[in-house]
Length: 149
Ligand SMILES: [Zn+2]
Ligand SMILES: [Zn+2]
Image 1 (cartoon, rainbow, N blue to C red):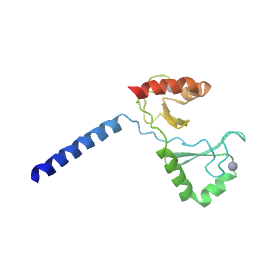
Image 2: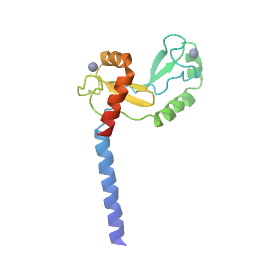
Image 3: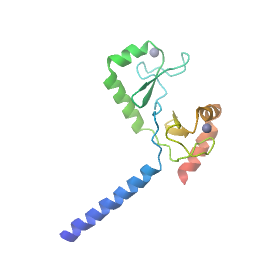
Image 4: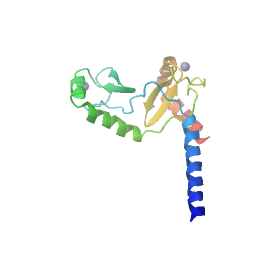
């Protein structure tokens, strides 16, 4: 009996060690990117009616199709934020600690994230995001390569 519980403890410790290791590989962004490509309130495809309205709630970036959706967002903030949390569960976390564009080491204070087609990408700076948006397909391939390692 005692032996059995010891081995359970050992397994738990091992599991904990792996989790800690995996966590080490991720950068905690100052602001988490918005994980959806539709307006949080209206469900409208973002960008279809001009630039999205962007705000930051806590450490979470929110995107709305227009400023008038802000009122509805604030009316039921808790439910809306839950939608964001749920959307994040479907996103594949960025697997590296280097910028997908420049390859430079990411600094948590400067790094920016973008969620594109269900995957998170991280960048060392906003210029790299611009570079990424020019050819997202190219970087999707690069991400697939990194993920294999
Ligand atoms: Zn709107
Ligand atoms: Zn950069």
